[in-house]
Image 1: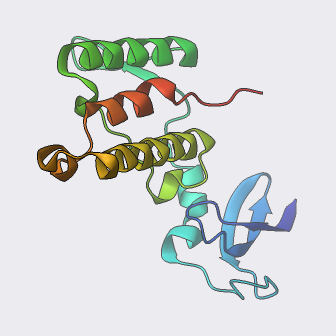
Image 2: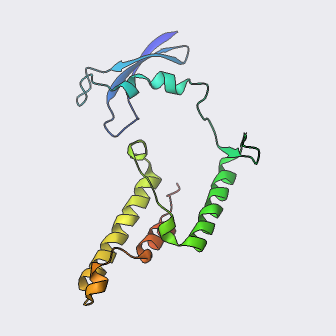
Length: 162
């Protein structure tokens, strides 16, 4: 059965209005929604290709772990997060907080965990800048943020759970 649904694109923060033609649950076409008050029918090429992304046979649908031989095997999300956390903890202990960076690019813009990390990092940077501006030492006030800011951002940011 063929239907058309009005929704919005989730690829970037513009959230353009789209109309999606579905045929037995499969996306057949994506086009701009001319009635959407902000995008007024505009969509980018990435948005129009949502169906190809959604139904691509190479699309990841779960966590994978790289094995010693280079192949990948499915792994439970909780186990994958534990393994990643342990590796990050090792890096942090061995090389310090400046060895770890976060990235919250366009695709992660709406990701609550990434936004939380960014907010904590900005707050830490403001505190560090405030401490530097009160410093009487010219050498200290001219330095960039120290490792204390990075440590706060890494250790204090936790995704919210509901």
